Length: 180
Length: 300
Image 1 (cartoon, each protein chain N blue to C red):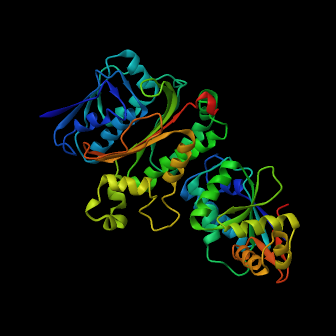
Image 2 (cartoon, chains in turn purple, cyan):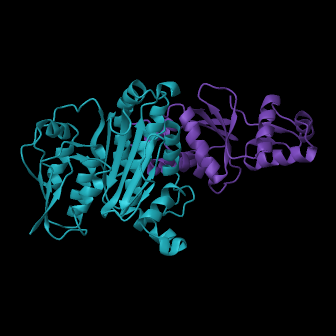
Image 3 (cartoon, rainbow over the protein chains, first blue to last red):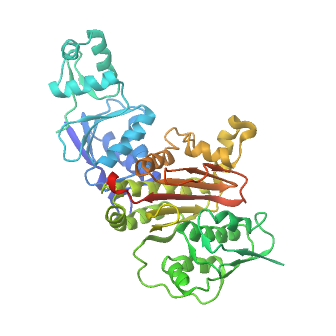
């Protein structure tokens, strides 16, 4: 099951002022608290955090909302997270803070369908992510064949992506998260 | 005994040191007269710098300073339209006729002089700036449309530094004007100022030790702007200024921060400023100026 959390709506519920700009650390922390509460009551396996109705996201909020959500101590079976509807400058702000923390998340840009890896990852992990998106999943052997790598190298890249919670795996095949 | 602090005829980030020197040791013991009669022009940095002086004196529990307004009617009108006198009236005993501000400010004032006291004020500033920023940045300066949002992000981060670090309130103003002397092009200037603890004191407890005897206003500014350090242990902190600096690199913009007795500047190709000035006359808190120039035709 997938649950969509509209960040703009949470923002409007959080601040009493009529603004659609997600700015300042206290505001970001309050919105993150609401996301965490929503996730705690959800049984979804993937949560889409939809930023499409957020006009502006500053760096402080990118850190408070996204980075700290990913850094939080994991609860039992936390859902996979996908950021959706990001505009270019929001993408840029989130990329900046995630790279700083060496974190990564799956995201889609506003109006785009293809997911991307947002944040910090090794070159191998990025190449593996992109190939998995193209092939809609692969085993380590299939990935190794597609990229001309050894199976061990492919497995290592896939495990790095699993550690970042960017892929799902049944132990045999690795699949990207659903973004549409 | 009273001390007269002369406002330079052209009050901007460069002549600000002359203004700061007028106060002598801080906080001055004598009753002050801020003399702006001969003022011909003040940048947003200059306007909010004067308010910062008034605020810092009030917080130091000094007598309310006297302030003689500019003699030039046009200058007075402009300062009134930018919102200066509205706030100055609370901090100074104004002498001279002050024109009534019109309902709307001049079109090149993107954000009139605005106090920043709390998080809500940052929301207010960001909300106010959006429409005018697009008109000026895209329409006049030739920056790409998405630059408007980056500009607003930079403004938000600069204002948050007051709320998070200054330990007191501050001021912000944003204005567009033609930078004849140094550039010969239109620019947008963000000025942010507070009379708070300043960078050195803000970072002292967490970072002074590793700098040893080199620790001072200049090293504190370098640590914050170049190395991205913050007084908070939270590893996510300290990125705001680094992000602003990155945007400014793209736009050939300039940022300078003055705090205490030092000023650190990231210098674009069009300017010939000094990267780090130390041993300047002391002025309380921190004063930030961000300049974004009109893009040259070939880079548009």
